[in-house]
Length: 533
Image (cartoon, rainbow, N blue to C red; front, top):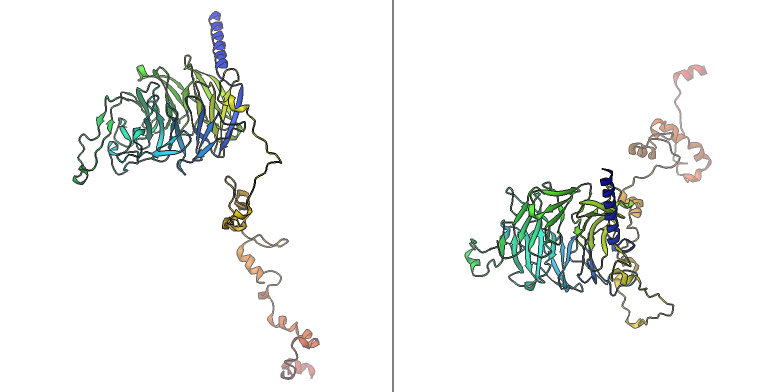
């Protein structure tokens, strides 16, 4: 028994050594710039260009061959303003990439970030999703085919996955090639929250909100024409027809893979296609064997996440898999998030790499052997790169050693004064704040101090005693309460107290009543007469 325990401990030490030897954690570089958490990333297969998408609606494009030590992107784009970025994916040739946002229409960009077009939007009033030419609800994920440079997969909250042909982008008939409808356990609407291709591109996996994971084949087998059984109105029969195909029969269905109603954030295949990983928003990561999908192989708990894009993936040698973990609630600023690394053979956690904030997206590139981690919170986001000078190649090693040019006092720029145009927005009253900065008086602290915006009540007069009610304040200001309360005084005495002053200083009345006033004759009562007698 003791010998067996010693052998087990030796095996654990060897597995830890394997992780230490393979995981590049010697150095770290940080690429900042996003205003919110980095939700997705994509790295070209050659490892030269990196895409980062965020909940601040923007996508940054980095070029390692031209980037300096300051680690700044060479282009920033906003695919759909107001919609967070959910997924990014490069084409196999690296000349185009797919951008999936919360908008129903995913977009295709070229290598330099120029928009090539967007897919069509479907009719939301058509109940059967196979008859719509596009998504009619917010998209949730997408991926490019591993080998076919013109095939793209997207998933949406309308409950369907769609395969597109990029060659027909902008065509009046649309670029949709096929529609994948998940098989429903019971009638109703569901959402497809995550999708992916297998490494050989033979099958498609989709995670459905009813708790199932459904696997569809990618070939023509199992697909039917969407025009079969479709009766068009007479006015539309001669104009168009559904030229795409559809499939509603999955090859394999993993029922009750996760609790119904919980969002599956990501799914991933191993290199041989036999192992499937599913990451759920309930804090679990489950391992499935596609050869026997009816039973879960392993379930990892206590992996907290609150984001819908938390990634799961495999290492380049297929020996490890990883996922992001959020910081516990209300502690995101204390660096409790992490990238959890698991062993595929032993099915146990072997390493946890701490990350400030929440860890959502992660990428372990095969050629570079560098780990890219997308992290942040609701205030800022950054991309952290883990690399090793001995184990990693190119990528971050190329640009970290390049120094940025320093500004010199001899720098001179010729400005033609005659060509200066004075526009109204250049005046102080029309000036707008710089991007990322707030105007004067617009900060949270300034707004709190503004009595008009916060409707702060008027403070009582200092050294004043009395109640704080509004009625008491008004009555005291009108001399209705207190020492000067005119209601408790004799009005005749109040007037006569000024008589002596009026006689001594007649200028106050300008002697207006000197001649007109009669001589006062006071009445004597009977008691006074009897006293005089």
